[in-house]
Amino acid sequence: MLRSAGTAGASRTEGATRTEGAACAEGTSGAPVAAAGAHSAASKRFEAAGRFEARLFDPRALLAAYMLLAAAVLQQRGWAGAAVASALTAALLWPLRRYLRPYAGAVKAYALLIFIMTALAGIRLQPPGFDTAAASLTLLRLGKLLLVMLLGLPLLGLTTPLRLQQAIEQSLAWTRRLRVPVHSIALTVALVFRFIPLLAAEWHRFARIACARGKTNSRPGSVPPAMLKAVLIPFLLSLLRLADGVADALEARGFGSRDEGAAPGTRLRFTRADAILVMAALVLFICLFLAARSGTL
Image (cartoon, rainbow, N blue to C red; front, side, top):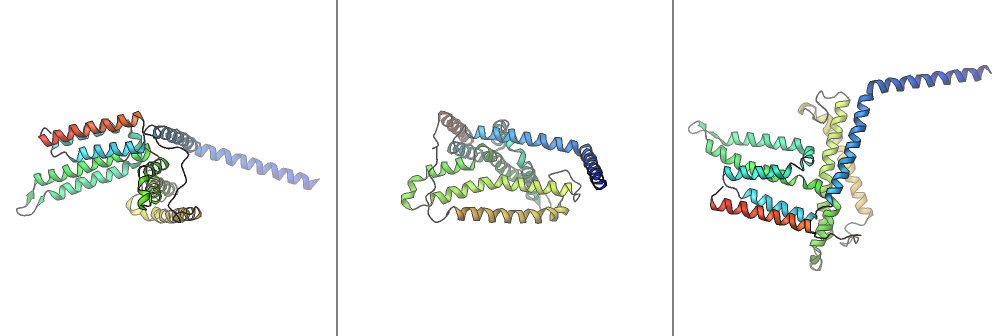
């Protein structure tokens, strides 16, 4: 009986200790837990919205519109045309601005690179001074490349890797007679589109882990250059494990043994919305191209 009473007392003591520990943990980290729950819910809503928007347009229409707009931007020769192209890019990207947030760091890094390259291009040694014409030309050329990059970043969120693979396979199906590895090409492109957001998410995950463990004093998600080692090594190990898992999955599915992929359950169809998107991009391209050639811009 005494042993039973002692056991019951120990159980009650342990239960009380666990309750106090849980209460302490909830009191000290309740806000982060709530924030994490809210972030998770927001992420789910974001992913659901992305999947909904991805069904609106055919990937072929998105790529065609992007190529037309990118060509129109690169055709601009002066600052007036670059300003018009910048305004057009801003107007197009404003509804899609949430797709640019994961790549804000890369955009800022490229903008800093443009500033450095412009400053270096303007340095004149004989005679010593600063060549504003050379700096202006460098800034114009690199600025147009920045606009092209910004126009292409939302494509990672507006289409899914599966739909992109289907679009490539359907568009290049006629080349199978020429023994072109259509399925291999489509799968490679789809994996690239799939792994770019995945690599960015892995990097941010390890950056948050390093910050939570006290190895950095910066805000979560960013790592100072002096502390890259604490994040880079586990990040590379994670990439190696990820690559090994993908290689095993591809080998298990017989990838490379033949170039005939599984028949998709649905086929992509060019709808009226796709035609309107491509025609609008074509009209913008013609207008900007003619304005640039005639010297209006």
